[in-house]
Amino acid sequence: MDTKPDDNKSAKKGTLKSIIIILGIGFIYYLIVRFTSFGILCYIKTFTGYDCPTCGMTRMVMALTRLDFKSAFSYNRFMFISFPFIIAEIIYLTYINESKKNVGKINKILLWGWTVLLVLYGILRNIYPI
Image (cartoon, rainbow, N blue to C red; front, side, top):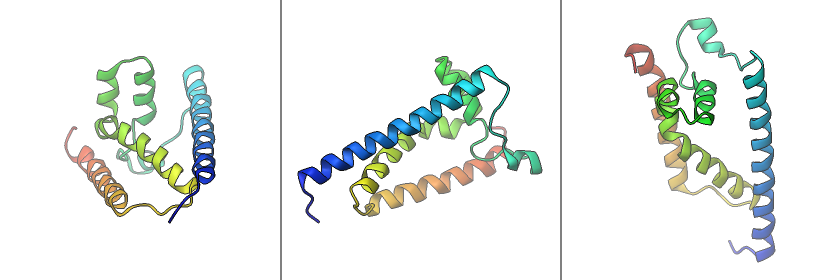
């Protein structure tokens, strides 16, 4: 599929706009968590007593904003390690969506592999103290 330069420029603008909106929402959530006792409740933990694969994400990000990498790693090891991949993938998929292209086979495999690893981490973190 050939794309015109104007289409790529438009896709880049749309991607940048989406990223700015996501960062804005994230910053507002950061301020709410930082200055109040409010945070997103994990319903899996609440109803089952088990940690979900993403339990500890808010604490991890809060520790990262303080550059406390040791604590951030301890809150959610899998997400700490895969966080750069996920951020890059979100940006890439946003661009692909804005440019009306199809997601490549390799990206689909990577995302499915990451999802499987996330689920395995969620199971293992409740069996072994990781």
